[in-house]
Image 1 (spheres, helix red, strand yellow):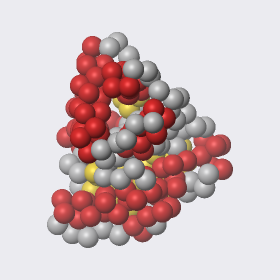
Image 2 (image 1 turned 90 degrees about the vertical axis):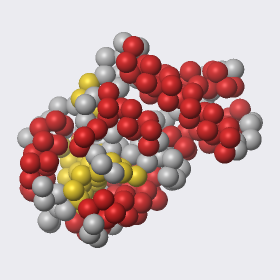
Image 3 (image 1 turned 180 degrees about the vertical axis):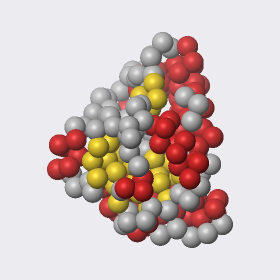
Image 4 (image 1 turned 120 degrees about the vertical axis):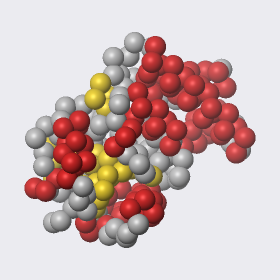
Length: 223
């Protein structure tokens, strides 16, 4: 298959924040609700879906204003944690080399397809020095349902590149079963990488077309 568009997940695929994001969510819940809230499953979830879950847990009504307050506090805590929290985050193996190869090739457009809200995604990419690789994307504040983010990403890719992209020539790169289902929902293929919380065996069982242990040495042209 010719790949014309690569859409990358962030957490567990490009970077490991060492828990800075989870702590920011907990700190925000503590500030707004007085408790850290329910145990959250971050793997492949959208930030807006997690916030909905929190509001339901605390029996609070979520409005546009309250959502704005939540995101504002979350972003403040996320940036502080990344810069000063000592969480020991890192760019995952093979990521920089793969992105540099794609940038040098020029025939493949590269964007994000992530559950992070847009400003949170940008904060993480800036912190780890990857932001220049991702001029567009679809994010967790576009919709709480990750399976609906694929068409948003295709539209933004087209707007950025000045040409249409088809799902059939799009590769979604992620580390969770939710990434695999998102790719399937939009009609794209998935390159699943076992650098997150799921093993290669688990990702194969979920139906990923291509599964690798890490992105080290992975050539998009071979996918």
